[in-house]
Length: 451
Image 1 (tube, rainbow, N blue to C red):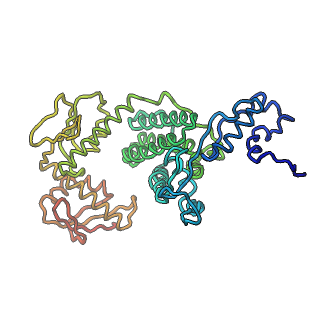
Image 2 (image 1 turned 60 degrees about the horizontal axis):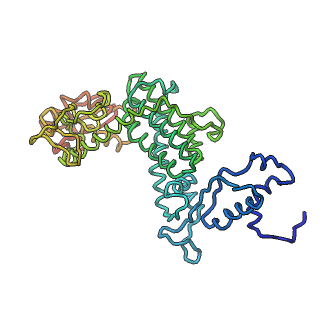
Image 3 (image 1 turned 180 degrees about the horizontal axis):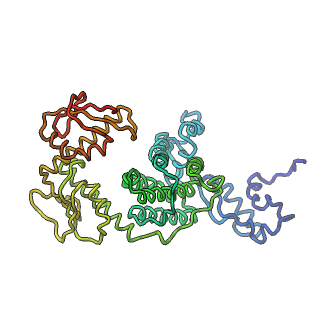
């Protein structure tokens, strides 16, 4: 092989790449002339290539009367330091990418660069933002997998068979996500595709799994299996749509779930199950969450803890199915919901201050509600002590208590069964206590021990 002494320009070489890679026009004419490998679907380079590679690609293909050699351009902005200054060795503000990758992972760095801003905008790189990706995306996703595997019984049936309202909602939400991400990627819109996935991962963890926690722990086998099947379906298919963005964690989760192919990167892109996208339910669930948000804001304004049960929440009449009411009563911690034409008024009623607020809370706390509030707080503190003692979710305990508080004595008598079930306690007995707890201003000494 001999070097040719004549050189037009090295940029000419790069511009000739679409043709030269096929040795065109001497061989493989069909690749270019019949558009088998021409033009390219997209090209991707930094903004400085506007007058470099981007230009010479167009120049060469135009000279050959082939038109444009690419259909789409993803133009990348430069990465600056966190203050927006160009990185330079002389300024001492360069960041070794291998340091970031080894500390936080390739996936975290990739996801940060996908979601920080539009590809063509300059990116002010701050290490703490990559750390945020670990906390707000990757760890949340990994924790959903851990939670699933904690209860997985390997008896997962098709998730589409579930009639449970939360299952139907998350399946609708996920298939809508696949639809949206597919459309965005067809448009080479990476940032919106990635941000949609990030929002879903958060919603899946903080709404679906949190609201389904009791189903996983419960004794209703059919309901538990439906929750497991739905979670398995979402996690498995989520790994497929995340694979182009975060290839390593996607592979790990896919393998943990026992995917059918050798690798998630050999899988087909998930098909949208349009019949599962219940837009009416999606709108209703959005209304439910807005009602909850408003009601919790009213609670906070009134200075009443969420663990303290209240009697009733009033909402203005709207088309919400009653099967969704339990989500509101649980989240807001009220005994009942009443849909009314006009919200009640009076000293015992607290209406939200927000514009167009549609909720009103009855904030009167009678003796029964107070005792139940004591039980909720007691459960929380006992479980915190269990955690401090290093007890697992399978360790049963016995509790000795001593208190002069008549309110707490009444609480323990009335809510003994609930307290036992919620703290995995076999017996609650009067006796010597070693740890003091403050339960809504009432004192009690308790001792937690294994039987």
